[in-house]
Image (cartoon, rainbow, N blue to C red; front, side, top):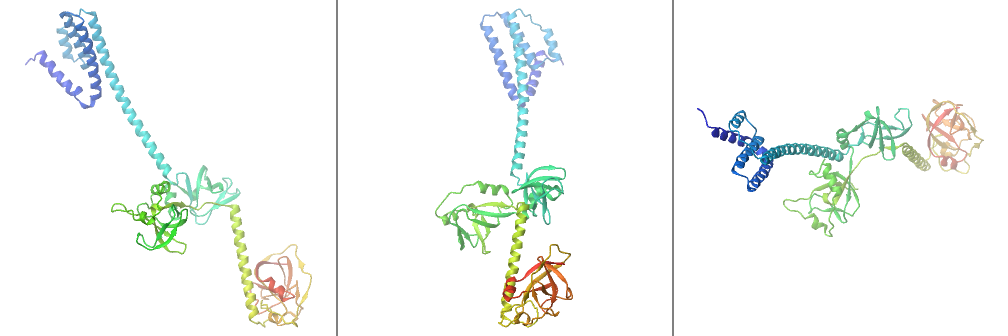
Length: 483
């Protein structure tokens, strides 16, 4: 059955309107097209009111058809219809209007497409910026984004240059942290405290691995934010008060509350938050409701007691061990050696004091006591010094004795038959150092001439002419060398 031209055109318009005009995807574009059509219609109406004839109206219809062609396109059937109903155009002015309308429609369509492309590009750029910003914030929040931690069993040496033979400048204990400055091959340049140098990369951890590893080495310290903060025996405002702290006091934190445990962002919030001051701390602690409860931090007092304090009243800092410089390590070693010598001297003084209270008649037992007026005082000689010592025979405990009755029974002879002489005579275990053996102690040459029941193993007794000198010598632990 053959359809009329108008029916065909009507169906085509409906189809186009449904697909390209009434579709929500093209709302912005359609609005711009509508604006263009309004402009074209305004021009046409203006021309009509300017006095064009009925014949010119026919030409206007032709212009409208041209606009339709520009906006909706020409199907093959529409082209045939147009050819069978060609209209004579007699007005050059309206032909120019038709051309301008088509151009305006094309401009509108191009503008819509450009706008859509720009919109899509803007959305894409915004997403990329947001992703980059989120990644940056994540990196900034990470505690070990630019730090490392020593993963060793004893100590990690720090070298001045990336070379195992380079000068030793410090060390890091297990769990000590440092800032990563850069890398050179298998070495990483770090800065920790006052120490800067290179460590082997295989003995450090960074990033998430370092953050997890650090949990076993971090120390939490609480800084009190106000005066009159109560440390309670239990996690309750009704519990007994163990101690009252003032602003800027510090306390050891044993455990954070569950709502902020292992949450770095919450800890940072506590560091930057400001707490409103109030004179009534009890009132502030009790300022809670069914939906708002106090978060309690577990702390350890100096006497070892466990207490609880409100998390809102304490700023929690994470403390890590830093590297120790070579100079500091030397100073620490010297202090320990001095403490050791002081302890040995104190032990010797106590031993001397005990010896004075308990008589000992055995010869050369390393004991000293008060002398009688008729005790043998002993001879003295100029000691022989050694500018160079021989082989070290070991570390010996060195004590002193004299010729008094309490030290050696008042005898004026040694076990080997010689006269004991200060600066020369020593008593020793003859199974280790036979009679006549010469040894060097603190640069002085001594000869083994005596023995005693109290001198066994690596123990040497040095003879002094008076009891006061023997008592002043005390007890030492030194290396002994062959002469």
